[in-house]
Image (cartoon, rainbow, N blue to C red; front, side, top):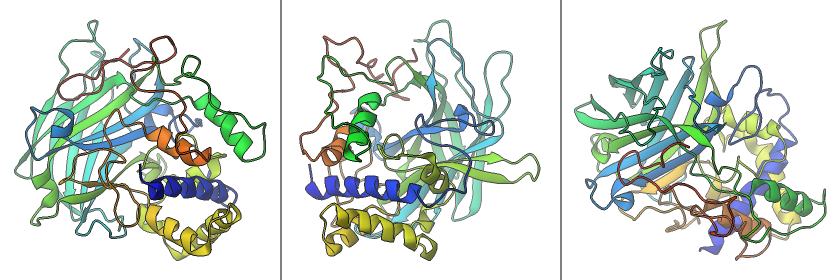
Length: 400
């Protein structure tokens, strides 16, 4: 594990806390399970983003295909049908990156937009996938969701969609939430680190609780040929983030209410919703804007108060903002399997990557810190353990 990566996560945690104090004007909530309002239900609440080379999840898969996973609707109960909003746009944003060490632009070179119709009596929803290239519509295709069946192991609906001369495949429906984290104890540890609670450690593996165990999510999984993302270029590295925008019934305009790039930040590192709300309403291209300078200055002061030099704090800020997930498709996928010269992860994220432990290592001051929760769980602890991933697309485990 790269020390620069761990320090960078620590920076981001500090900056989020600092930002929360200066952006009180937004009134809607966000990410993994951080609250709801009357104007924003859970089906327009992002939980996680995963991006990986399909061959790294399935050795028998076709080379050159990427998998994008957007999970929403946290805390979906077992054996209950949930729906995607028919008043929202669920979007994957992709920028082409010519230099792995370059600062992310937050530019929409490619946009994948999913829009859903109202649920039918069959519990199924029709959806439309629209692809935009460099701001222009490249094509659309229609598909259908996979409703919750009496037999959850029944074959899912995998929609084959032809757009811009390329074949994409999409799944939309309920799957088990793959995220794993002892959130309750993390909040206690964080409070102690911030001086607003007693100093405590993490529970041992036989006592740690995985808050996502037993829950489902609404998942959108899409297989995308790298060639579609390249367009007329030979670029093999991409920056990815996801958003949800909701239609204002008064104006007909879509307002962005959710945004997510790197994992294990919004889910647990923010003390209040104020920063989350502001952060979720902007594009990554604004993270380094002049308007955000006071935010970066506050983050730097926080870092220096914790013992970092001015130069080191500046370097960390440069490494982890703007917030996107970078994937070099010439490398094996894995969240901390590779970093660039800035210490930024550049190899996407696989479904079973333990992104939480890397964050906890910084927040607790120990490189070996862990919440003692894993995807497969501890055999002696029934409060842990997820279902096995399925061997083929869409890869997420069957719903509970």
